[in-house]
Amino acid sequence: MAAPELSVTSAPLTELETSLLVIGVTKGADGPVLAIDTPAGVAELLAPLGVTGAADEFRRGPLLPGGRAPIAFVGLGSDAGPAALRSAAGVAGRFASGLESIVLALPVDDEETAELVLEAAASGAYAYLAYRTGDTASKRPVRSIALRVPASFDGARVVTAATATARATHLVRDLVNEPASDLYPATFVDRVRAYAEGLPVELEVLEPEELEAQGFGGILGIGAGSSRGPRLVVVRYAPEGATTHLAIVGKGITYDSGGLSLKPPTSMATMKYDMTGAATALAAVLDAARRGAPVRVTAWLCLAENMPSGTAVRPGDVLRTWNGTTIEVTNTDAEGRVVLADGLAAAAVERPDLLVDVATLTGAARVAMGERTTAVMGDQAAVDRVLAAAEEAGESMWPMPLPPELRSVLDSDVADLANAKPGHTAGGMLVAGHFLRTFVGEAGGEGPGARIGWAHLDIAGPAYNTGSPYGGVGKGPTAVAVRTLIALTAHLAGA
Image (cartoon, rainbow, N blue to C red; front, side, top):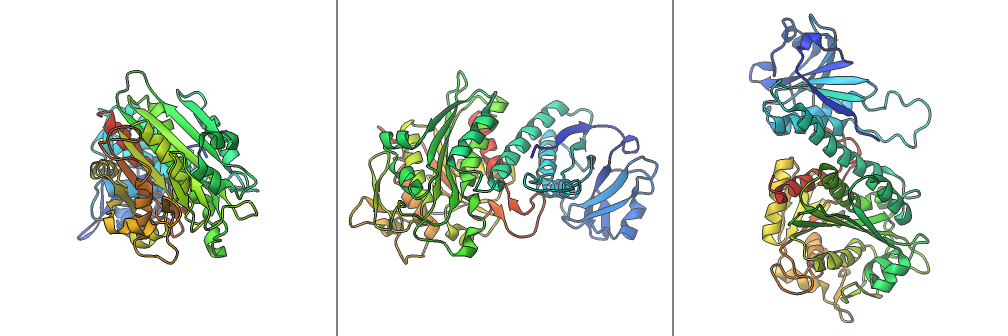
């Protein structure tokens, strides 16, 4: 679904013509308080409409007194800081379904805040209607969103930046929403080609025969049970003069049945989302290309469908990965780390300045972190860089350790390491982190596979919202980590 058209305006409230004018309200100690200056008579509407200013509150009202547009009030809570503004803008975008246009009147004091508010509203204005039939007018997202800003702002810059971020997050949500019957490794490649058209990127696509010839045994092994073969897609953005290289490896399991270690039926319903990491990596590299960022960015999309069949990898089988490391597969439902092993090893050999992987990797991360916080593991300096970018982007991420004693959980009697230990449940996401670390070399080391730093983002919890909508996030895919990777790219560019 295309992101709405974004714009800014400095026109007085009474001159605005729009389907809905959304005014911010804070929750004061003595009642609701309008967050901006408004014409006479607006404050008197708050009490009759039951407006309190509470976070995520949305109340529609009559025409603006002395104006032309219908109004609505959106709550900012007790603090009108960036997080509250982002949430309120997202709520406005969600509740504007079926409208042609809205204008946001929120307390925006600088261009950075204006950008995040516009982007958040666009995030809320999302719906996946590709498989809906009949009249979908009431579900259609608002077509255009404007934000009132001071005339001194560089509106063109704000709109361009917000539009780019919105486009990236909508790309991820569209891909994750597409049913696995239609989105599998080969058609994922088709989507990549379509999204990349016209952008300064190079694509390298390895099909099963090439994966075998080049030794990508992890991806091949996990995809062996499906009639629809795996792929590895490398998307390269390399602007002239770039001196910094960011590599992003994304888990792209287009459907995860668990393989022969079959998941319970109730756990399978949302498993089309197991390719969110690959979608996120793709969105990040295409965003860098679209903005013309002076940073080299490479995305490695490890695509496979994990299915049970007579050709599927079995518990006890040994796979040989791209760098020669052998893996005993003790649990075919711990498949994501196996495809990432190939991608990480190949990416690390290019010696990027920063190597990040993004994956809906472990149920243990959801148990430990909940459904709105991403766990970050890896080398300290790399983790710190990711966390700094996440804070700027307004995404909740938290550092987690890799305790050395947990590495022995992956010991194998027949191979270099096992992908899991049957029956072992303690620190599951940390054990997975240790597994991935095996394939990224030593920070600051020399020779093949050496790199400056690596960070692993386990987005299993926050990548897919199964609960009630909040802020600009409805049910389904959230596009978590996209904004963080965009901010991280800007940091590497020195912005």
